[in-house]
Image 1 (cartoon, helix red, strand yellow):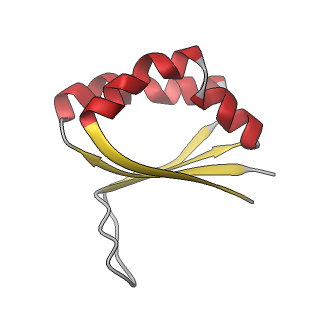
Image 2 (tube, helix red, strand yellow):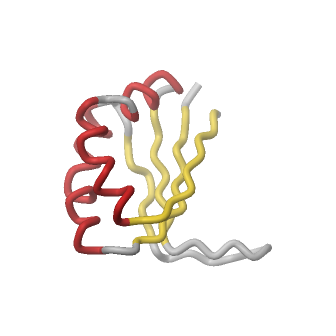
Length: 94
């Protein structure tokens, strides 16, 4: 069953976020993941959610997602995201 990671990201420091942005896609691909969407073009239909940027990444399954998230390659760049953005991240299975 595929696992989708959905990220609602508000970047606070674009300069330091560059280190993360320049490297994250390669780490995702190493674990069989695919970035489906990364966009600031968001239209609210209902509710009061106001995301700045949405990213959706597809992994083969939850094990592949966890393998990526816990990998040394990702953990190396994760601090750059944590100091550069405020994110809400969920996974959903389909």
